[in-house]
Length: 93
Image 1 (tube, rainbow, N blue to C red):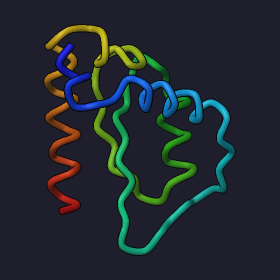
Image 2 (image 1 turned 90 degrees about the vertical axis):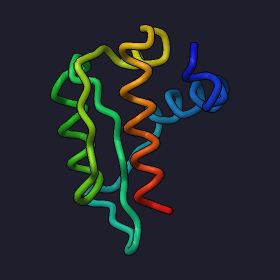
Image 3 (image 1 turned 30 degrees about the vertical axis):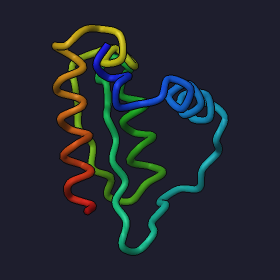
């Protein structure tokens, strides 16, 4: 599982868990920052709407997969998602 060579499994679990519990204000915007999302479109449109509701002008990369499938679904999912994450990071350096 190549994704775990870059990411700590515990931090991924914590991120998913806090996502379920965190209440956010609408239209969050911090000057000089950009919010990035990996969106698995098989999760449903409610998640896409949620990202757009809570964050102003988020950068969203959409993938044809289930939620967190990039972690466990093999290279066809892991590779493109890790590439997108690298691209997000390059823009912010």
